[in-house]
Length: 389
Ligand SMILES: [Zn+2]
Image (cartoon, rainbow, N blue to C red; front, side, top):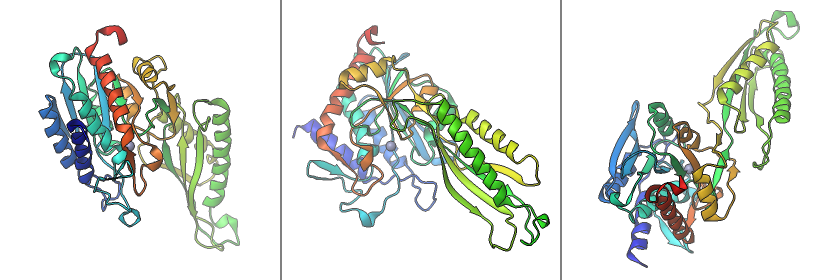
């Protein structure tokens, strides 16, 4: 095995060995600083200027922005440093072992997406600051798996990082330029309890919810008639009724009912507008009675992403992979990077199907093709003249 390949594998192993789970549940949540510090050391050694930016109010979590070269424009290679929680009992391999077997490296974050961070560094090692006409930025973020606070903090800071961006989430080495958004909302109806024998003694929240659900299904049908995008496996926006709880006893008028819904909007459907329409429509349904309607977002939500088909990074990755840029069902940090003025493609080794699973792995055969691709992109967007810009 050549030294460079040995070093790449060793780096992937070292990144896997450091636990960096992020989770909304405090019993799982861990700092990502040890991963950030390890990356910072390697990147400094490779000639990068490194900035570590702790998240607001979360000193134990940080983003890392490492830059080689200077000036406007340039290419950003981005990945998250955190992983999802894991169920050690269901793993055959040590989740933090980075064991190589059957041509694969096994470990939590192997494909999603610690190997990519090592690959970005390995590709960058072929270049020095003097080679570059435009900067190369390696961006490593915090808390992607638990609410995207790292990317949100970058977007809130509003500071542009580059013109073109690639996020190395597992897409089987195929470029992706679109994904749906996610909106999850709790809808609560408060009524008044009373004896079941006389409806006038209370206000039935369950009956109110019945009307709310009818309106939601009507709204869904309208959205699906209005929006369609054939690049997606599920071509229309979806609205799922996922959880409902209300009342306690058959002989009591139900005083409280709560429904949780999940909406997956297509690109072009902004979350704020969607949420506004939801509140307005359901508000109208219950305007007449004494039932009280309230809404709580279950998390901040993720915007849908669409990078134009004509974007230079889309065309370059299509050309280099021979695959047309497509759409995926999972959310990424892409919309936040695009909001900062970048044009972002999602493209990385491995499959999302083995991410968030016991025995997560990355096939070693995907390492070199990804490395070649990254080197070509750096050459095109940071070294050559404006031909590709
Ligand atoms: Zn990921």
